[in-house]
Image 1 (tube, rainbow, N blue to C red):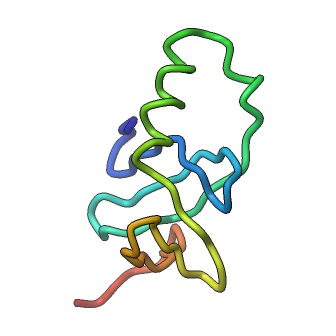
Image 2: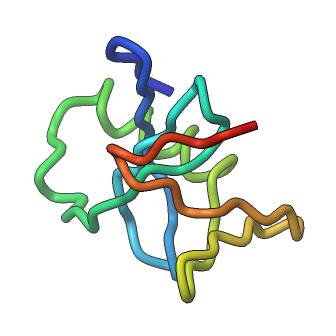
Length: 85
């Protein structure tokens, strides 16, 4: 996982495709994702990140719901939305 300010990102498999996924640490949710091409990442360090991250982060996404391979469900949290607790 790679941290920038209060948001982290990592590589993940979303619907069996390689993606960068953006996580909001404060809200414990997923902000979004974008599909990426593995060939874009050329260094050994980047390839290692892909290997380690995708073993942990495997999701299916449908109707604003992320479901992890082990059955844990995460809701999509838009970037500018505040959550009342």
